[in-house]
Image (tube, rainbow, N blue to C red; front, side):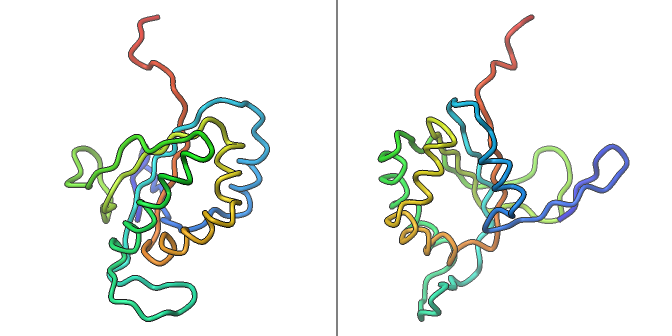
Length: 150
């Protein structure tokens, strides 16, 4: 997937897991404030589990199992789901292919998010995430009133 950026081509790569540099940067941030993780989700046609189990689930159905379970994992660390919805069309800009869904989750801090993803119960639930996703973009955001007058 490519996006034009000021006359240049900006490549967009969906992934299922962060790379080493992304993890290092995430762990090095010291500010302890709430984060809102925007997830742009692209599903596989058919779920493929890491343990090679047979399944008739679609990628979206496998991810839905993860979605139901992750709500409890978020609550354990003080987080919560904020929004989830279908991607219907692209209003502005150009991309080769759209994502299927958007989800936003709030974590009280990066530390809370790391605590959640290291929890063995979460890791068990995450098998459904990995089985269902073709790839995704995770965009870390924080609250700032961009509409406030200076």
